[in-house]
Image (cartoon, rainbow, N blue to C red; front, side, top):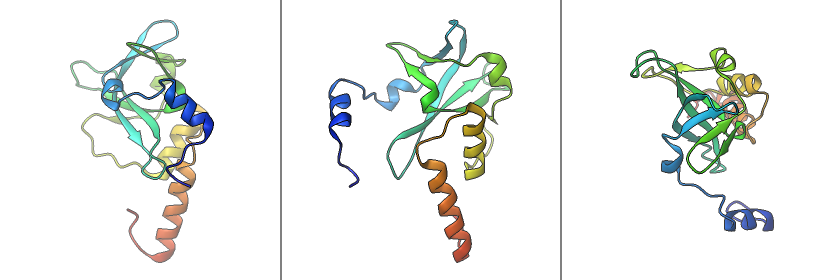
Length: 145
C-alpha cells in the first residue's frame, strides 16, 4: 500500500538518509578525480512514487550564457556533506542528453528513455509508467497530462 514503509526503508530513514531538496539544489557536482562538473540546478520527482528520479545539473557556458542542463539519474550520484559526486567525466557529459538553459522544455517518455539509455540505468518505474500513461491517453484520444 502506498505510504507505508517496509522495515528496511524505516531503518534507512531513521539512520539519516533523508535530505531536504533545498540542500541538494545548488551543490557542486564533482567527478571522482575531483574535477567540478557543474551544480545541481533542480530535482525531478516522480509524482506517483514521490521519489527523486533525476537531479538536473547545469554544466558549461559562462555566466549562464551557453549553459546546458543535464538530467542525471539519481542513481548516478552520491552525496557528501558539502558536495555531490558522480563517476562521470566532462567528456562523457559532452555527449549526454541535455537542453539549453531558458529553453522551453517538456519531459517526454522518449526523452526519459534516452537519458536512461545514455547513463545505462533505469529510473525506478518512471519510464514504464510514462509510456503506459501515453498509450492509454492516445487510445482514449485525450491529450497527455
